[in-house]
Image (cartoon, rainbow, N blue to C red; front, side, top):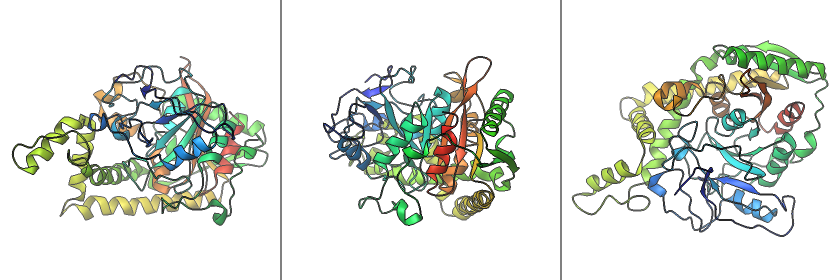
Length: 409
């Protein structure tokens, strides 16, 4: 398999003849199940796996008339930032324009990060707004499927197609029962008159100077359009990255236990006992970053350490959620740079895994709080590198962040 053009497979899947997405092509991330089409999660463990069914979001795309041109490359099981942990190589041309729209998954920023680094729009929905049925799980309590698009309006149109309750996913909820509706595209009107924006100071600390400057320029643009802002403090964010990785790695350790070379994945052979076969399967099938996270997650969940790490991380998560809720009582949306740094070159994050983890400092807290967020292009650095601006809303407040984002994109 080759992924130089960003695709794991280019097997085309045609949708209905008509519908809101007729004539549109939608690339689908390779951890979202497609009936009879290889779905690898960027891992040698699943190199030849063909799901026997479509994910709910895929069914909804096809019913809406979309064409799926292929499955996009990804970091192995979503564990990384730049696709460099993929077993099939890094994607070197993510903005080639091979598809009109795309579906990604966001466990700690993997819709918003690539959107920010590629100068497009990426939207992470409220947890439960979009079905996860057919998504190969990394961290169940954190991840959501979300759209990527050139503009906010197009992202909103795609969200309208995939959102809504699903009897196959008990975590989904009907937005109408939460006082919202599904008319997202109509909210992309660019009207921010009277919008009150809260700026969490913690999400500016330590960010690159050019990123911060670009962010404030975008705030000025929103003010000129009729919005206002005030600074807010979310003290719990000091612990967000640590809490996120303890929880995410713990859930990954549990979820990836199914890949044993018997039911799924690379066979470890039939020589010796089952434990030896299981170890060989995972040694051959998993890459180094996946192994690292599984080991750390298993350690955090082990007897004697569960309360010391995992329980404390869950306590921090509750505190983070409370801080966001209180800040959103005083503001319509919260805003920050999506990523604290400009896009980095291939190779940089692999040399320093801690740097890769810290790059998620502005995105992971929103997953912990299960809130919606959108990344939109805010401008460029002096070197022409894109900078993203993130808007966060209350639960099922997608229309607020779409309205705010559409004033910029």
